[in-house]
Image (cartoon, rainbow, N blue to C red; front, side, top):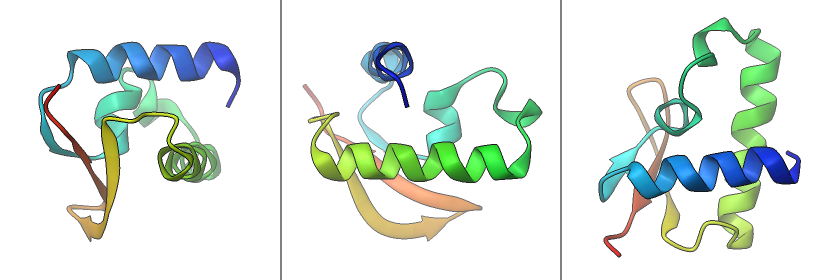
Length: 76
């Protein structure tokens, strides 16, 4: 992911309520239009960034449910 994409995701995360979520909720409009390979790549990139601490308020729960990996956003 480039810096512009990371900034866009940070802005979308700011608007997201605390609790669990799936990456497509943060990605936003256009997710359903991406080819499956692109969804997998972007999802993996997001996971790597979360694990690297790029989004300090977000953690990987290590669980999958409802069709994808669950993340948790802490309250600010």
